[in-house]
Length: 383
Image (cartoon, rainbow, N blue to C red; front, top):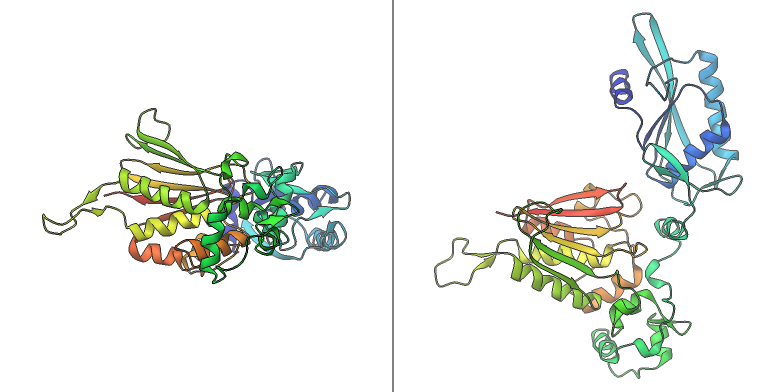
């Protein structure tokens, strides 16, 4: 970072990834800030800047050394597990002389959740921080770290009686084990059944009524008049329910009935072609169903406007994934069981090429990883 970049950054104020501190007055407070950044998406703390006004007051040589040493001690002794930080000093010239600042870089952690010596877990909340108090949030931190898969947990009150044997039979054919006898032992071996209850992945693929136990795990599909999601008039609005393969099939039907079928240069006697690539829509809808964050009790949303189509998935991209990385085909498996079942029962390979294939078919797709809103939004312009 150079002086001009620093001045531009300071002029924009504090954010969830940028914090100002004039001095290191409280090791407890700084530890909490470092923990919150490690548990979120990382960030920087700039010492020598007033947090209320953004005024660069600067640090002398002794202060630079003292704060740098204390930061290293905090990262090692006051944060569990310890984190590793990097620091840099920067001098900014003003009319009355130069002023030094210390910039502490904190990466997103790979051993979440991080906590202080009292066992408190801190998270970023906009430009502030807060204590973690919700069990679902704690579960998501473990999930981000790869310590647990949400789709492998059991769904309370379910039993073997909720399993649709025909759906299991179809899966057995796909894995070349169609002669296997359907017993509870088989269901356990397939990870459909755990401790006499269905796993979440088992519920979402092999249950006769998944929404009986997880009503929010559906698709809310609306075709609006106009281009405003706050509008009160729509052409069509349905809740798409069932297993993941069934929701995929019905979701594609919604696209096919709600979007135009256009001539696209073909002769008059030809059947119209869907205005947005069918292949692109299949890839994007499958990604939404298989990669969404199932620790969030929320539906997938499909919004069709006059100008665009939006597919909104609960949960931002997992771990350190970015929009650029998924375009390159980088894979981070969030839902292990769901990916396994989908690879046999849907048009899904799980190789990380779906986004690239969608972009090849429909180059104007836009992606937005909404970290603060904890959702992933795909937008496809309409002609």
